[in-house]
Length: 196
Length: 349
Image (cartoon, rainbow over all chains, first blue to last red; front, side):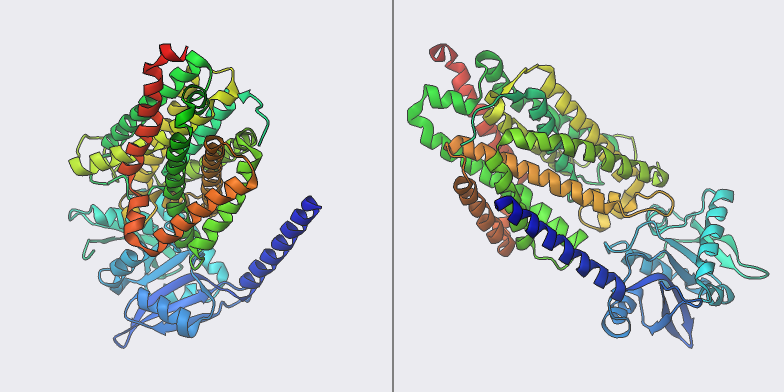
């Protein structure tokens, strides 16, 4: 009798916890990539949702930092926001010294961000293109991997960029730069430690 | 009360080894980046050498009398049974809270933010009460499963971190900060709690070999060295930005686009803490002479109340998570008290 009761309890727990998880996954807004650019003096953080649609849903949030953008997104713009699956942070080239380093510093303090997600600089055209199709995200990742293959000193993820910036003694850190002169292509660009 | 069935000493040692290995899973800024990797490694070896010393009295008792300290003291000094039972029960309650606090904290901060630490602690304790009622023999059988799971989880964690290794992140040179080195050394002495479990349960085992504790500590050292290596060279300075550095290692580990090894890590930490507290409750049952649900549940309730108080009051938490108190207490119950019986060995015979 006791065993039967235990099995029943276990079964009920599994069923209910499973239903709860599936409900959460259905309603969660899973963000795959985020891009940052400045327009008319205001920073805009654009969150691209994971979806099966041809053009991913995006939400642009005016904020002074990524920390503020995440807070605003969760509270105001994107209910059930999930950043655990963030794969790529694209930063406009003009923001490489100020915004990018500050945002990486913030990300390094947060558990839910994957330390091995990619970070890259890009020009305005590349920024626009990457938001057009979910397939382009994979193309960008392939380009970034190819870039590292050709240039092993390039740093692609939060973890390696943060660590390299921490020990930077003026030589700079090479990171990926996506440009779209003819087609989307990853090059390298040096950044120098500014803050922390 | 469980009937006294002798089980393999190897199995108990395997369980103790897994308990010792789990200490590093709950590591939270105990190993300072101010020390180089080599210095931290030396601190770890020093700490485990202390553990080996603490193992000597129970091993001598096992070798000389083929029994454990609790059985021996019950036979030789029946008048001291209650004070000794109280001392050991107090130690196991303290040590249980010492482990349950960082576990619930890690679970609620890193894996499932928003969950209540008290609820998580209560669930773990409920499972531990059930396991403790079944006895140490059954828990050590669970240890075999956990060993296989730990191998798989560690393979994923270390294998997935190889790609992130960067030797510029730390150094093999000997630079150190004395205070941090002392703190790391004290931290690495904390796995000596396994000597106390051995002092309580060794009498129920058979086929003991002197090499068994040696191999258990050697394997523990290997596991610690690997975690230290990957935290220093794969995670680097990033590790100091957050709590629970071993957990971050599981976040860093990935195979191409496959990641999410933190679930395996949390499962391993959960099962390890479950096993440690179950073993503690088994020892409490043995020291107090009870073995039923009521006895285990009563002590689990005391552990829960202590953990609950620690969650609400930081000064209580500081007492329960103090490495020095644990080590001094461990030295008393694993070394000094059993040594008194060893030095009066002729009278015992």
